Image (cartoon, rainbow, N blue to C red):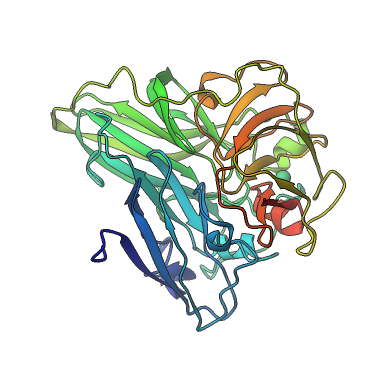
Length: 430
Ligand code: C2O
Ligand code: CU
């Protein structure tokens, strides 16, 4: 906290070593530590100032994924931080409580920088309590899920072993950097803030016992009401907040089941889509502290667009490493959106590869998927959405930022190898 009631975060990226398994520690990258990055936290209305020093051997950036920020503070490829340099973005938080995250976004090098370990949560709070479990580390748990491969010498294997063009799909699944972890549960209800922080893998989370849980939040905020379900699917970059109720002494395993991607047999297999993975065991103590019941209502989110037939003003076709046939060019701005305007965009993956779509600055609402109203898990605020092959996904966005015709925001596929290979474009707010 600074004197003026703002938040100041001192962050430093550097190389380090992390122990994933017995034997030699693995050379990794981290922020304020050897691997991953600290959870940052700020409330709506607070001013955030970051002092980010890059002590890595190459330029990087820090991007605030899901955050409404001025374009100059966004930490995309246009704000590189050279080795030894410091970058100090500042902005005022003006959006609902949510689980956001931050990671590097250097042009063409994002996959590598994230894979080596640069990623952390950025939790936003509201002044109003929502009645959800909220004691960080006790009943409110960050769950950053990432997959990786280690070489025989315990180095991070940075080779793309797959045929699917998605980049690295790992067979070692980690939570907050730990393989095969367990979570001691001491309360009747526990809130898990799930982040798919993987480069390419799509997870479909559920429990070994088949139990249901309450989905309470998506990328950009809480749902209107808890949604009881047995599964939640997250493609790279997506988040979900879930609340799980356990009985005293109970154990269960958070797993990933084969995701529903709509891909054909081969594309599915090459991209890890047939895998069932154990992610984390929950172990309830013999006695559990009382948790308050789940609130029936969580957050208000008025629909930006109410008619699902509203025609899109822009269309995006994702294919291979391109959007509308063009690949990313740092010197080409694809379009300008008017400040304060609401737009409907239609995004369609037209090849048989896994893709999703992420937009900087604005949280969006899914208007329709394949012409139908979105399922409940896509009814909250989103900044990243999976785009099954051949299925048009319409989203509604409002751009509230100050106009800055000189500095673009990005939109791209969050499968990081796709992004690095050019499946990205740029827009400005004017
Ligand atoms: Cu999480 Cu443009 O990225
Ligand atoms: Cu993609």
